[in-house]
Image (cartoon, rainbow, N blue to C red; front, side, top):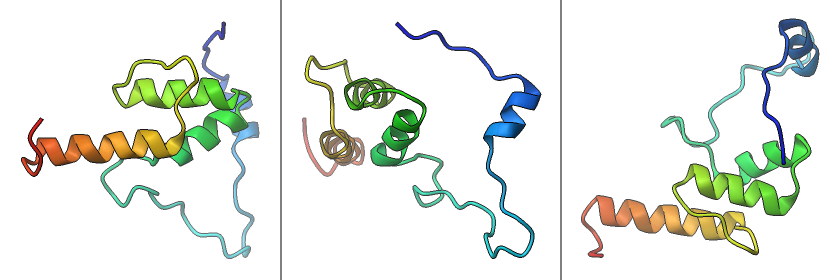
Length: 96
């Protein structure tokens, strides 16, 4: 079981990679296109980079998207498909 904790201010500063002056790297853009929601793949990559397994990352992203954890874990394609269907139902384009 994982324990969540916040990084200390100095620790956080060391973890964040900052572009060097003149490297051409501009400010980071929102991957989801401006509505503040990241794609499932982006969230899973972030979790996997933080040490979570693919199975754990899929279940955490699924949980954040309103899904129950699955025994085999969720993959990004399944999560995005269910988010798409939910959007169709919420906009009235599809009856449930």
